[in-house]
Image 1 (cartoon, rainbow, N blue to C red):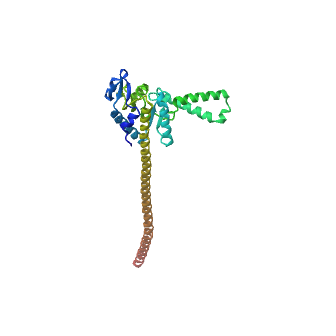
Image 2: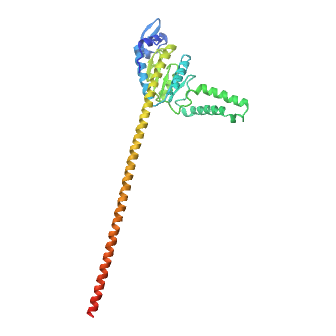
Image 3: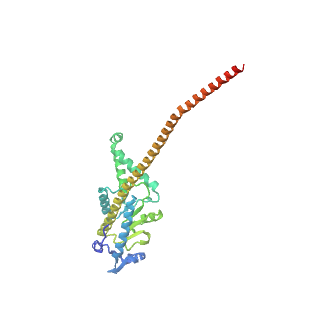
Length: 309
Protein backbone atom coordinates (compact mmCIF):
# COMPACT_ATOMS: atom_id res chain seq x y z
CA UNK A 1 0.00 0.00 0.00
CA UNK A 2 1.29 3.46 -0.89
CA UNK A 3 2.62 5.77 1.81
CA UNK A 4 0.82 9.05 2.36
CA UNK A 5 3.20 12.03 2.58
CA UNK A 6 3.17 15.01 4.93
CA UNK A 7 3.05 17.28 1.85
CA UNK A 8 -0.21 15.66 0.72
CA UNK A 9 -1.73 16.14 4.16
CA UNK A 10 -0.56 19.76 4.26
CA UNK A 11 -1.95 20.58 0.80
CA UNK A 12 -5.29 19.00 1.72
CA UNK A 13 -5.56 21.24 4.81
CA UNK A 14 -5.54 18.38 7.30
CA UNK A 15 -3.54 20.46 9.79
CA UNK A 16 -6.21 23.07 10.57
CA UNK A 17 -8.03 22.43 13.84
CA UNK A 18 -10.76 24.38 15.61
CA UNK A 19 -10.52 27.58 17.61
CA UNK A 20 -8.58 27.31 20.85
CA UNK A 21 -11.71 28.01 22.87
CA UNK A 22 -13.53 25.02 21.28
CA UNK A 23 -10.78 22.45 21.79
CA UNK A 24 -11.13 19.25 23.79
CA UNK A 25 -8.42 18.91 26.48
CA UNK A 26 -8.07 15.20 25.62
CA UNK A 27 -6.96 16.11 22.08
CA UNK A 28 -3.90 17.94 23.41
CA UNK A 29 -1.49 15.19 22.33
CA UNK A 30 -2.36 15.77 18.66
CA UNK A 31 -1.94 19.55 18.71
CA UNK A 32 1.31 20.97 17.33
CA UNK A 33 0.70 24.62 18.25
CA UNK A 34 -1.88 27.42 18.35
CA UNK A 35 -1.66 30.09 15.64
CA UNK A 36 -4.02 33.07 15.37
CA UNK A 37 -6.28 31.45 17.97
CA UNK A 38 -6.53 28.29 15.78
CA UNK A 39 -5.03 24.98 16.79
CA UNK A 40 -2.63 23.38 14.32
CA UNK A 41 -2.65 19.57 14.24
CA UNK A 42 0.63 17.66 14.23
CA UNK A 43 0.66 16.08 10.74
CA UNK A 44 3.17 13.44 11.84
CA UNK A 45 0.48 12.16 14.22
CA UNK A 46 -2.10 12.40 11.41
CA UNK A 47 0.10 10.31 9.12
CA UNK A 48 0.66 7.72 11.83
CA UNK A 49 -3.04 7.51 12.70
CA UNK A 50 -4.10 7.28 9.06
CA UNK A 51 -1.66 4.47 8.26
CA UNK A 52 -2.66 2.47 11.36
CA UNK A 53 -6.34 2.90 10.48
CA UNK A 54 -5.71 1.87 6.86
CA UNK A 55 -3.84 -1.26 7.99
CA UNK A 56 -6.82 -2.21 10.17
CA UNK A 57 -9.31 -1.63 7.32
CA UNK A 58 -7.15 -3.64 4.90
CA UNK A 59 -7.02 -6.56 7.33
CA UNK A 60 -10.79 -6.28 7.89
CA UNK A 61 -11.51 -6.42 4.14
CA UNK A 62 -9.11 -9.34 3.61
CA UNK A 63 -11.20 -11.37 6.08
CA UNK A 64 -14.41 -10.56 4.14
CA UNK A 65 -15.87 -8.66 7.10
CA UNK A 66 -18.30 -5.73 7.08
CA UNK A 67 -17.71 -1.98 7.37
CA UNK A 68 -20.10 0.98 7.53
CA UNK A 69 -18.86 4.41 6.43
CA UNK A 70 -20.67 7.15 8.35
CA UNK A 71 -20.53 10.62 6.80
CA UNK A 72 -23.74 12.55 7.35
CA UNK A 73 -22.32 16.08 7.52
CA UNK A 74 -22.85 18.17 4.40
CA UNK A 75 -19.17 18.25 3.37
CA UNK A 76 -18.84 14.46 3.59
CA UNK A 77 -22.04 13.21 1.94
CA UNK A 78 -20.97 13.51 -1.70
CA UNK A 79 -17.45 12.24 -0.98
CA UNK A 80 -18.72 9.10 0.78
CA UNK A 81 -21.27 8.32 -1.95
CA UNK A 82 -18.62 8.82 -4.65
CA UNK A 83 -16.21 6.54 -2.78
CA UNK A 84 -18.85 3.80 -2.51
CA UNK A 85 -19.61 4.17 -6.23
CA UNK A 86 -15.92 3.69 -7.00
CA UNK A 87 -15.82 0.50 -4.94
CA UNK A 88 -19.01 -0.81 -6.59
CA UNK A 89 -17.55 -0.25 -10.05
CA UNK A 90 -14.58 -2.43 -9.07
CA UNK A 91 -17.01 -5.08 -7.77
CA UNK A 92 -15.54 -4.91 -4.28
CA UNK A 93 -18.54 -3.54 -2.40
CA UNK A 94 -19.42 -6.84 -0.68
CA UNK A 95 -19.40 -6.07 3.03
CA UNK A 96 -19.17 -2.28 2.54
CA UNK A 97 -22.12 -0.04 3.51
CA UNK A 98 -22.62 3.69 4.05
CA UNK A 99 -24.85 6.23 5.78
CA UNK A 100 -25.01 9.82 4.48
CA UNK A 101 -28.47 11.06 5.50
CA UNK A 102 -28.46 10.66 9.28
CA UNK A 103 -27.30 8.00 11.69
CA UNK A 104 -29.91 5.26 12.05
CA UNK A 105 -30.56 5.19 15.79
CA UNK A 106 -30.56 1.62 17.10
CA UNK A 107 -28.72 0.19 14.08
CA UNK A 108 -26.21 -1.41 16.44
CA UNK A 109 -28.11 -1.60 19.72
CA UNK A 110 -31.53 -2.65 18.36
CA UNK A 111 -30.82 -4.22 14.98
CA UNK A 112 -33.79 -6.61 15.03
CA UNK A 113 -36.25 -3.68 15.10
CA UNK A 114 -34.37 -1.49 12.61
CA UNK A 115 -34.11 -4.41 10.15
CA UNK A 116 -37.93 -4.44 9.90
CA UNK A 117 -37.65 -1.14 8.00
CA UNK A 118 -35.15 -2.81 5.65
CA UNK A 119 -37.83 -5.41 4.88
CA UNK A 120 -40.39 -2.64 4.29
CA UNK A 121 -38.06 -0.96 1.81
CA UNK A 122 -37.52 -4.28 0.01
CA UNK A 123 -41.27 -4.94 -0.14
CA UNK A 124 -42.15 -1.48 -1.52
CA UNK A 125 -39.37 -1.74 -4.12
CA UNK A 126 -40.59 -5.18 -5.30
CA UNK A 127 -44.25 -4.10 -5.35
CA UNK A 128 -43.47 -1.04 -7.49
CA UNK A 129 -41.75 -3.31 -10.04
CA UNK A 130 -44.67 -5.78 -10.14
CA UNK A 131 -46.91 -4.53 -12.98
CA UNK A 132 -49.55 -7.20 -12.39
CA UNK A 133 -49.89 -6.24 -8.72
CA UNK A 134 -50.07 -2.51 -9.54
CA UNK A 135 -53.20 -3.05 -11.67
CA UNK A 136 -55.10 -4.04 -8.47
CA UNK A 137 -54.47 -0.66 -6.79
CA UNK A 138 -55.27 2.99 -7.54
CA UNK A 139 -52.71 5.51 -8.76
CA UNK A 140 -52.98 7.29 -5.42
CA UNK A 141 -52.08 4.13 -3.48
CA UNK A 142 -49.15 3.40 -5.78
CA UNK A 143 -48.00 7.02 -5.36
CA UNK A 144 -48.06 6.57 -1.58
CA UNK A 145 -45.93 3.41 -1.95
CA UNK A 146 -43.38 5.36 -3.95
CA UNK A 147 -43.26 8.20 -1.40
CA UNK A 148 -42.74 5.71 1.43
CA UNK A 149 -40.05 3.92 -0.58
CA UNK A 150 -38.18 7.18 -1.22
CA UNK A 151 -38.36 8.06 2.48
CA UNK A 152 -36.98 4.64 3.50
CA UNK A 153 -34.36 4.77 0.73
CA UNK A 154 -33.02 8.10 2.04
CA UNK A 155 -32.79 6.76 5.58
CA UNK A 156 -31.66 3.16 5.01
CA UNK A 157 -30.59 2.84 1.38
CA UNK A 158 -26.90 2.50 2.10
CA UNK A 159 -27.31 -0.14 4.81
CA UNK A 160 -30.53 -1.96 3.82
CA UNK A 161 -28.67 -5.09 2.67
CA UNK A 162 -26.65 -5.56 5.87
CA UNK A 163 -27.49 -8.84 7.63
CA UNK A 164 -26.35 -8.05 11.16
CA UNK A 165 -24.05 -6.01 13.36
CA UNK A 166 -21.10 -4.62 11.33
CA UNK A 167 -17.52 -5.53 12.17
CA UNK A 168 -16.39 -1.88 12.22
CA UNK A 169 -17.41 1.75 11.60
CA UNK A 170 -15.46 4.40 9.71
CA UNK A 171 -16.74 7.79 10.91
CA UNK A 172 -15.88 11.07 9.18
CA UNK A 173 -16.46 13.31 12.24
CA UNK A 174 -16.47 11.58 15.63
CA UNK A 175 -17.79 14.69 17.42
CA UNK A 176 -20.68 15.20 14.97
CA UNK A 177 -21.56 11.47 14.95
CA UNK A 178 -21.62 11.16 18.74
CA UNK A 179 -24.58 8.75 18.75
CA UNK A 180 -22.84 6.36 16.35
CA UNK A 181 -19.71 6.44 18.52
CA UNK A 182 -21.69 5.68 21.70
CA UNK A 183 -23.62 2.82 20.08
CA UNK A 184 -20.39 1.32 18.75
CA UNK A 185 -18.75 1.53 22.19
CA UNK A 186 -21.79 -0.09 23.81
CA UNK A 187 -21.80 -2.99 21.32
CA UNK A 188 -17.98 -3.36 21.21
CA UNK A 189 -17.79 -2.48 17.50
CA UNK A 190 -14.29 -1.15 16.56
CA UNK A 191 -14.26 2.42 15.28
CA UNK A 192 -12.03 4.33 12.87
CA UNK A 193 -12.68 8.06 12.81
CA UNK A 194 -11.42 11.47 11.78
CA UNK A 195 -10.91 13.25 15.09
CA UNK A 196 -10.61 17.04 15.13
CA UNK A 197 -9.34 19.14 18.06
CA UNK A 198 -12.87 19.51 19.47
CA UNK A 199 -13.35 15.73 19.88
CA UNK A 200 -12.24 13.07 22.37
CA UNK A 201 -9.79 10.67 20.65
CA UNK A 202 -9.89 8.21 23.57
CA UNK A 203 -13.34 6.89 22.62
CA UNK A 204 -12.11 5.88 19.15
CA UNK A 205 -10.12 2.69 18.53
CA UNK A 206 -8.22 4.08 15.52
CA UNK A 207 -8.30 7.91 15.69
CA UNK A 208 -7.06 9.95 12.71
CA UNK A 209 -6.29 13.47 14.01
CA UNK A 210 -7.21 15.80 11.15
CA UNK A 211 -9.44 18.59 9.92
CA UNK A 212 -12.95 17.13 9.61
CA UNK A 213 -14.51 20.21 7.98
CA UNK A 214 -12.36 20.86 4.90
CA UNK A 215 -13.50 18.98 1.78
CA UNK A 216 -9.88 18.37 0.72
CA UNK A 217 -8.99 16.80 4.05
CA UNK A 218 -12.08 14.54 4.11
CA UNK A 219 -11.55 13.50 0.48
CA UNK A 220 -7.89 12.55 1.00
CA UNK A 221 -8.58 10.48 4.12
CA UNK A 222 -11.68 8.75 2.75
CA UNK A 223 -9.85 7.93 -0.50
CA UNK A 224 -6.91 6.46 1.41
CA UNK A 225 -9.21 4.30 3.55
CA UNK A 226 -11.08 3.13 0.43
CA UNK A 227 -7.76 2.19 -1.21
CA UNK A 228 -6.97 0.10 1.86
CA UNK A 229 -10.39 -1.58 1.58
CA UNK A 230 -9.86 -2.39 -2.12
CA UNK A 231 -6.43 -3.89 -1.45
CA UNK A 232 -7.85 -5.95 1.39
CA UNK A 233 -10.70 -7.22 -0.79
CA UNK A 234 -8.21 -8.38 -3.45
CA UNK A 235 -6.36 -10.36 -0.79
CA UNK A 236 -9.67 -11.71 0.56
CA UNK A 237 -10.81 -12.89 -2.90
CA UNK A 238 -7.43 -14.49 -3.56
CA UNK A 239 -7.49 -16.26 -0.17
CA UNK A 240 -11.03 -17.45 -0.82
CA UNK A 241 -10.01 -18.92 -4.20
CA UNK A 242 -7.04 -20.68 -2.58
CA UNK A 243 -9.30 -22.00 0.18
CA UNK A 244 -11.77 -23.38 -2.39
CA UNK A 245 -8.92 -25.06 -4.31
CA UNK A 246 -7.55 -26.52 -1.08
CA UNK A 247 -11.01 -27.84 -0.13
CA UNK A 248 -11.40 -29.41 -3.59
CA UNK A 249 -7.93 -30.97 -3.31
CA UNK A 250 -8.76 -32.40 0.13
CA UNK A 251 -12.10 -33.68 -1.18
CA UNK A 252 -10.40 -35.39 -4.15
CA UNK A 253 -7.83 -37.04 -1.85
CA UNK A 254 -10.60 -38.30 0.45
CA UNK A 255 -12.58 -39.64 -2.52
CA UNK A 256 -9.43 -41.36 -3.88
CA UNK A 257 -8.82 -42.97 -0.47
CA UNK A 258 -12.45 -44.08 -0.29
CA UNK A 259 -12.30 -45.57 -3.80
CA UNK A 260 -9.03 -47.34 -2.96
CA UNK A 261 -10.56 -48.82 0.22
CA UNK A 262 -13.67 -49.97 -1.68
CA UNK A 263 -11.52 -51.54 -4.42
CA UNK A 264 -9.46 -53.33 -1.76
CA UNK A 265 -12.63 -54.68 -0.13
CA UNK A 266 -13.96 -55.83 -3.52
CA UNK A 267 -10.65 -57.57 -4.31
CA UNK A 268 -10.67 -59.31 -0.91
CA UNK A 269 -14.27 -60.47 -1.42
CA UNK A 270 -13.42 -61.84 -4.89
CA UNK A 271 -10.39 -63.67 -3.52
CA UNK A 272 -12.52 -65.25 -0.80
CA UNK A 273 -15.10 -66.39 -3.36
CA UNK A 274 -12.39 -67.93 -5.55
CA UNK A 275 -10.87 -69.72 -2.56
CA UNK A 276 -14.26 -71.13 -1.58
CA UNK A 277 -14.88 -72.26 -5.16
CA UNK A 278 -11.55 -74.12 -5.22
CA UNK A 279 -12.22 -75.80 -1.86
CA UNK A 280 -15.62 -77.19 -2.86
CA UNK A 281 -14.40 -79.86 -5.39
CA UNK A 282 -11.74 -81.05 -2.93
CA UNK A 283 -14.35 -81.42 -0.19
CA UNK A 284 -16.66 -83.27 -2.57
CA UNK A 285 -13.83 -85.64 -3.56
CA UNK A 286 -13.07 -86.31 0.11
CA UNK A 287 -16.70 -87.10 0.81
CA UNK A 288 -16.91 -89.47 -2.18
CA UNK A 289 -13.72 -91.30 -1.12
CA UNK A 290 -15.05 -91.71 2.41
CA UNK A 291 -18.32 -93.15 1.12
CA UNK A 292 -16.49 -95.69 -1.09
CA UNK A 293 -14.29 -96.80 1.83
CA UNK A 294 -17.34 -97.28 4.03
CA UNK A 295 -19.01 -99.41 1.33
CA UNK A 296 -15.91 -101.62 0.99
CA UNK A 297 -15.72 -102.12 4.75
CA UNK A 298 -19.40 -103.04 4.86
CA UNK A 299 -18.92 -105.57 2.02
CA UNK A 300 -15.91 -107.16 3.78
CA UNK A 301 -17.89 -107.46 7.05
CA UNK A 302 -20.72 -109.18 5.20
CA UNK A 303 -18.29 -111.68 3.58
CA UNK A 304 -16.69 -112.44 6.98
CA UNK A 305 -20.10 -113.16 8.49
CA UNK A 306 -21.01 -115.51 5.62
CA UNK A 307 -17.65 -117.30 5.94
CA UNK A 308 -18.24 -117.89 9.65
CA UNK A 309 -21.56 -119.49 8.97
